[in-house]
Structures are given as C-alpha cells and as structure tokens.
Image (cartoon, rainbow, N blue to C red; front, side, top):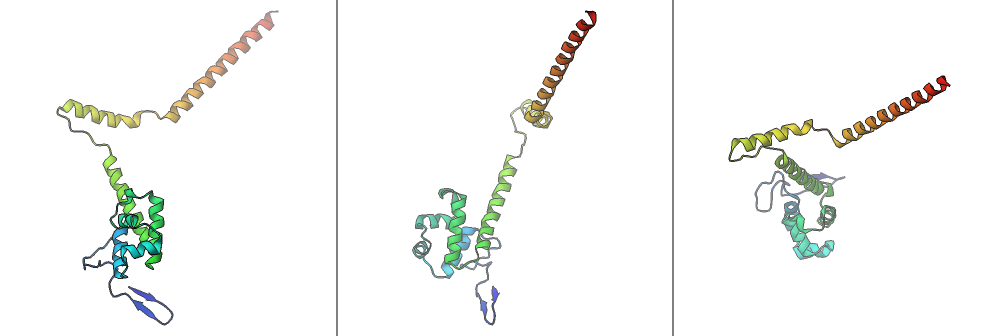
Amino acid sequence: MRVETSRLRVVDLVPPDTSIDGASNAHPTPGAYVRDHRKRRGFSLEQLAAATKIPKRQLQAIEDERFDELPGLVFVKGFLRCCARALKLDEEVLLGLLYEQERAALRGRRRDASPAPRQGTDGAHSRSAVARVRALPLLPTARLLMWSALLVIIVLFVLVAFTLAANMGGTELLS
C-alpha cells in the first residue's frame, strides 16, 4: 500500500489483502482486520486494551466476530473507531467492512425469511400452504379497511341528512 505525501513515500511491505499468515483475504471481516493490523504493529491485546480503554474481553469478542456479546451495534462501531485510531488505521475502511458484513447478514436473513412452501407428508397440506401464500397479497390492508369504513359512515350520514331534510321540507309544504 502506498501513501503519497509531500516528498516522502510510505510503503507498507504487506499488501492489505494478505493476512499475517500469508493467506489471502479479499474481503476480510472487521475483527480479522483489527487482529491482523494489531499483530503487524506488534501490539498485544493487553496493550490495545490499555490504549483504547476497552476491556480485553470485549476486544477479544470484536476480533472473534462475536458482536452479539457486546452491548449493541452502536458500541461495536465506537469500539472499532477507537481501535482504528489506536492502530492508526482508516476508520472508514474498518466501518465499511462492518457495514458490508451487516448487509450480507441482512441479505441472508431476507433470503431465509422468503416464503417457501413447506414440504408436508401429504400433498394437500403443502397445497393449502401454497394457496395461503398466494392469497396474502389479495387481502386488504388495514389502511384500506379504515378508509372504506370511513367512506361508508360518511355516505350513511349524508343519506340520513337528506332524508331528514326531505321529511322536514315536505311538512312545510302541507301547512
């Protein structure tokens, strides 16, 4: 990786897509990225914990990609920013890795949540499940039902008003 400065050119001897072991990581995860750069810089986990004021246990969870053990995603982002500053890394690259990982997880959850017919022991059960899935878009939404009910109430109110006005107008003509 080359960084242009005014007269000095800084060259990192290890390409960014190669881990410490020499294995190629085209799309590293944020935890692996922090671990690789921490080892490159010669930091121990304890030293990084002291530099960032983040407990060692939580740094280990970040490096092992166990984000569910941390208080929340907003804390993960903050911890990654602190690690990036302490290791002199670009914060946006590190957070970009986190965002890409979250997008991939979201795509996986959406793919898993897509309605698929269940395989039953008999064909009738699975056919009824498919029929229910196909019928769902045909059901009216709650908003549509609310506006329909409101329209019916207004029409009834107008009919009652005209009926009362007609009855009152008819009695005036007779007297």
